[in-house]
Length: 199
Image 1 (cartoon, rainbow, N blue to C red):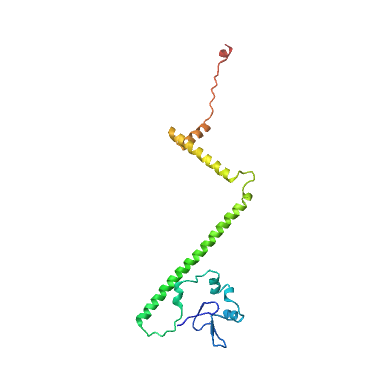
Image 2 (cartoon, rainbow, N blue to C red; image 1 turned 135 degrees about the horizontal axis):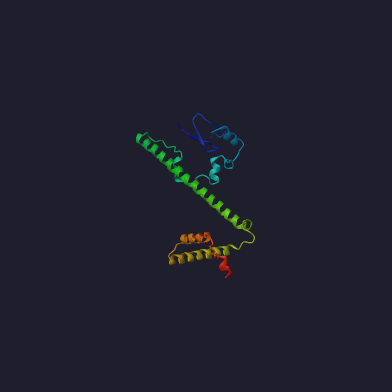
């Protein structure tokens, strides 16, 4: 079973399908469907039609240069039938297809990774340019904010070291402070009898 490729979109033309056009100079053009045949008659460039493989290769979306493509070339050399040769060829075809799909997948992921990096850079640029819309007008400058945070962190660390030297932890001191706040104030009032007050 011979599988042809469409002249316009480079997809597979299965036996019994598609259209064949023979020009006056005896050149044969095979198309997978009427859409490709119509585009060819209108003299459209396949690289400009977004749905063709030529466009995908032209824009860098598909793998173009690879050693696995060299095996697909048609060879017009008559070879004597050999069963072992055919078996090895079929095995090699499967292996080559597997390698090609793996490389194509890697190529696509590499291309998409670049897009994510570009989007992230654009987001960072946008935040940097329009930070005045997010930050309050009376807020301090970014470097000052960072210094203030660092000072606060240093103070907390110093306080933690002090408490560990004394022998209490931060949690216990917090509990003690909470108990002190909740403890009711006790006022002592002395009551005297009238006789004692008179004296």
